[in-house]
Image (cartoon, rainbow, N blue to C red):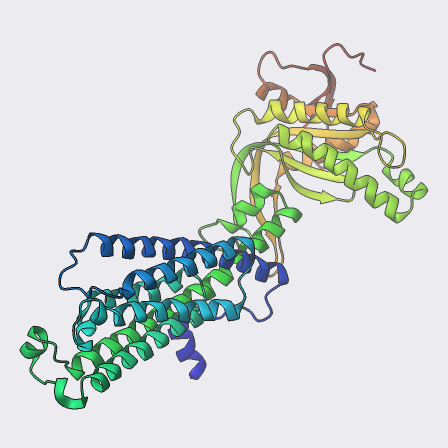
Length: 447
């Protein structure tokens, strides 16, 4: 029951033990908030000074004027605090003293009015400057930490209570107290109920703001955690797939998918199994990382999306996750770009790699498959199966890029590459023959 009430008031608490990187991200945001608070405080000081300067000075004490001194002290304090916030992360004890100093200096400024204008102490209780108390309390809401809001509100309430007691003490006890509201407004008498109302208002505003900030703090922590989780997710799947998953209007479930006209490409390193036998696991992992980094640059250049890694193989799609009307041509150029990169790159084992590619264009289903708790976001369908078979058939023809007539047709009449027919082949698993073509760079001799 208590948990339900607390969650209703303060919002759902984030999971215990936030990762260090999440905590650090929140701390960075809090440091930025402290800089903003410093600038706002400086603006308030300028407003105080400007109002004091332009306000007519009538019936003022001709001797000591405390207001300019209080403003000067607050100006020095504000500049010091602002400078420190840009140089370092302010410690909790310093922030605590800062909040107390903010409210304390404001109370001293209000208290000095009766001296400045040669009036009884009760004069300052009616100063409109008291409204700035709420600005200082609200200012702490810029930082997602309700402790400082409550501290500011509590300090302000105690400060105002001290000002009320000072009036009663300095004016001879009960002589200045009235119960007549008109007398209170038109004289220097004080109305205890009015001062209690001010203190209650200070405490209520502080409490409400603290609850609001605590709810926002918890939402912020969950949002930062989710953002970092999404960023981490994009390292294991493509950015496009991660964005599609995290920005979906509804939670993606197994079987959810849509049919799109896209181009699919499978790649595989020639002789990878033999090569694996000659390398240590560390060398093999390093070689694959270098290989994937080099080929990924080409894939991203032409707008491809790597949907899946499997050993040394990749499943790459064009126009399946992100729209691209020129998907077929870009897929073929990606395959040729991978060939060029592999010819020009010496990998960590001191040799070159050759990559076989199979490309097909047609309707595919893009979506999630798997169980309720374990999903894979990928593409599937007959178009995908043919592309996978073509990649394997490169061994049969001694080629490195094979594609279908559907892909060539989608590339347009004058594609920037050469194609050579390899006949109609009945791909394993299908009964209908498929016209296939090998792809080469323009001017390259075909085997």
